[in-house]
Structure formats: C-alpha cells, structure tokens
Length: 155
Length: 155
DNA sequence: CAGCATTAGTTGGTGCACAAACCATTTGTA
DNA sequence: TACAAATGGTTTGTGCACCAACTAATGCTG
Image 1 (spheres, rainbow over the protein chains, first blue to last red):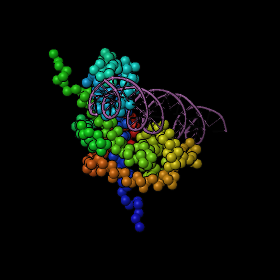
Image 2 (image 1 turned 135 degrees about the vertical axis):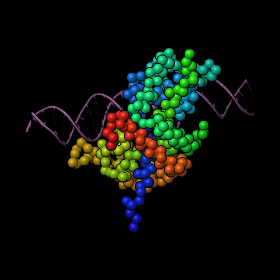
Image 3 (image 1 turned 90 degrees about the vertical axis):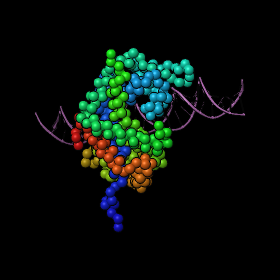
Image 4 (image 1 turned 180 degrees about the horizontal axis):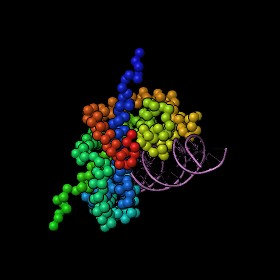
C-alpha cells in the first residue's frame, strides 16, 4: 500500500516556483515603498516615470508594451500622475486616437530625487551586484518563457 | 562638458532589478491562470489551498506568516473560498479570537486536480528543472534580504 | 467613396495588496 | 480581581491588475 507521506509532495515543491516569485516581488517592492513615498509615487508609477524619463513622449500603447501592463491598468494610473502634476496627457496631432504622455517640468525634475533610489535599494538589500545581475538574467529567461507560453511575441 | 548620454543610466540599469521581478511574477501567474480558472481558483487562492492541503487547520495568523500576506488581504479571500464551498471558517474553541480554517470535502478533493498543475506549468514554460531550482535559490536569498531590509524577523 | 475591420484608449467589474482604524478576546499584572 | 496591554481578525480606503465591453479615430477594400 502506497504511503503518501513517503512521496515528495509535488504541490509543496512546485509551490516554490510561483510562490517565491510573488513573495520576492511583493517584498522587494516593500523595500522601495519608504523611498518612493516621500516622492509621492507608488512602485508602478515609478516604473512609468522611468520609462518616460528615458523615452518621453510615449503613447499608452508604448507604455503598455514596455511595462507589459494592460492599457486598462495604465489609464487611471496616468490620470493620477497627471493629477499629481508630473505628466500631461495630450493628443497626438498625427493620430487623434493616440495619447502623447509628456513630462511636466515638475515631472522632469523628479528625476534628480529618483537617482538616489537605486543605490539606496542596493544598500538596503545588502546583496552583491553580481548576484543581482545574475538574478536578473534568470528572470529575463523566465519572462521570455512565460511570454512564449502565453502566446505573446518573443520580442 | 559632461554629456549625460555617455553615462550608463543607473535608472535604466537598476530598473531591471525591481522591474524584472514584478514582470516575471505577473507573467508567470498568467501562465497559471488558464489552468486555475477551470478549478475556480485565483493564484493567491491556490497558494492558500496549498498551505491548507499541507497543514489544515490553520488560523489566519498562520496563513499570514506562511504566505507573507496581510491578514486584511486574507480575510476576504477566505470568505470567497468559503462561499465557493472549499473551506469552512470556524472558531478555535481554545481561543475564541482565533479562526480555524478547515477544508470541506470538496476542498480536499480539489487536490487531485491541483496535482496536475505543476507538471503542466513546467511543460508550458519549457525550462529545465535545474534552472528553475537555481532561480528559486536566488529568489529565496532576495526574499531574505528584503525581509531583513523591511525589519522582519529573519525566520 | 462607402462601409467594415482594426487600432487606441476608456470604463466597469472582480479580486489582490497594504495601511490604518477598529472590535473582541485573552493575558499579564498591580 | 479589576484593568491595561497585547493579540487575532475584520473593515475601510486607495491603488494596482486583468478582463470584457465600449467609443472614437483610422485604414482597408470592394
């Protein structure tokens, strides 16, 4: 008679793949929170600002592709950023459907504060840069694998 | 004159740490979604069921510690699981404050379906088990580092 | 050029996540 | 034994995240 207690539990084992990923994500974001809060940003808003500092102006479609986020998620988020005075949501004159999200001067200036965040995070985590780099490579492979599994283009 | 374009952008570079983590988490959960949906479970609910299949009965406090989730998140989630007929929320007779979350027969039976999920995920991702194992170890180190940074006990 | 499919964004609904305020039970102690 | 502190959960409010349905502008094709 097979004793279930003897078999290494696949549910317990595999739980670590998805579970560790979501816990790591949430807990690392929690490290960002006290640093972002004085800037008046949430973590997703911070990511949007990163994209804009690098590539503004951007359409919702572009942000959606870069951040791999639903337009339905970005739409209200961008309105909050606009209400905070960091961005403006204009219409692209060449295509009246598309939005051109641009930075306000205040939004541009916030970059100075944001530059202090990465070193502060690394210091708080107390992990080696090489290990973080290595983790990043692993994550990129998982992202590619998940995107392929979800039928997204490999781009 | 310093040309900013020449400097490797710390904001763009570091973005990968937090950003890759959240994208990987969301996109891997998206791989689970079509498998969990026919079971009537969301991914967080699946994690709660995993904990219960292994350790029921559990108090909200125990689930909160195991899954590293706020009690305020678990409370309505457990009510939805109860509404779905998978768990019952009883009172611990020894401590009327504590809840004893127990599995219903339907909740217990669902484990049979759940056992098909881990291999299906691995197949869909198409990644080697060794690489997943390696990723898991990296994630555990990040979780420990983040917990330390957030002032949690190292447990 | 008329009409239909496509594309860009928004809206509404459900559910997760966190923080703060709150309530009830227990525990510790003066 | 009364009462204050601590503990276990719930509630409320804000903000993500996804999906499906919708609107408006554009493009394509007969």
